[in-house]
Image (cartoon, rainbow, N blue to C red; front, side, top):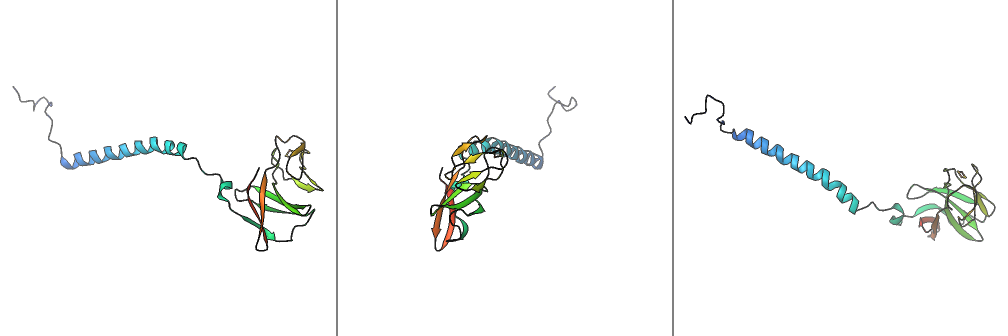
Length: 155
Ligand code: FES
């Protein structure tokens, strides 16, 4: 009695190397589960910054290179195509991609036209007519040290 060796119920003494390996694998598994659970929570509480908050200036060209009725296209800091044009001695920058289906708007006199489905916008970007769900976003324009720059979204 008391000898379980023949029945197979007696436990063999644990090999220290195997025990350490098992504990290390268990620890790695715990770290993995912690990462999988914690990573989405961190992302929820720290949303990515909008690129328009970077205050990055995009160079358009030399001062005086855009006059009334002329325009130049540039790519904004957040990857949005922008049209910069002159009107009444001022420079205006609007998003060039039509909010309807993404065609590029063109300067047409004092307004902007979308060639695809007929949307029309004022020189301030407000929707006049057409299927676009909204107007065009406007960006700040800066003239510094003889150069024209487009800044962040202002409306
Ligand atoms: S894409 Fe501009 S009106 Fe449709």
